[in-house]
Length: 144
Image (tube, rainbow, N blue to C red; front, side, top):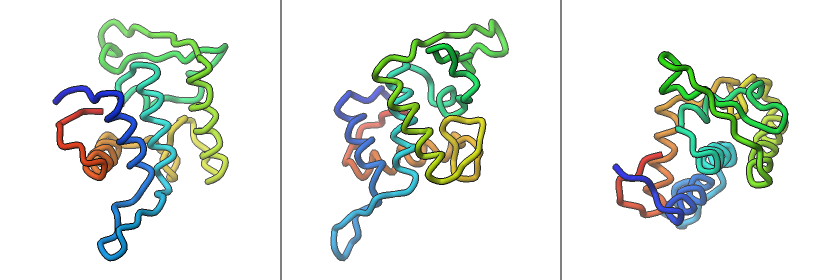
């Protein structure tokens, strides 16, 4: 497994917004989960954080112009936290997630919840990633 290139991330994002093309027409339709999936990808990309730390991000971790991550990898050992300043590139991702939650009337402490108000599961997120990667025609084993 290797990290995806910038171009691969863009393609996976694009194809995460669409369904698999229909066999009879070749057309794709927008997916309901696509916009939130893109928010998760964007936040991980912009903050250089692991998938688990982004999908489990709570709104309470966002304050005073920063996002406070407690890395899941060190939570049980050093418990180190990382403060990431909310940049002009990060703020639209947060705003988009809030708009999606508002649109679907989702009340959840998580910034990127599924419609059942819980965070995405590891398998759910990776399965979306793999489907989007396949639809984008990316055969490399790139990881989230």
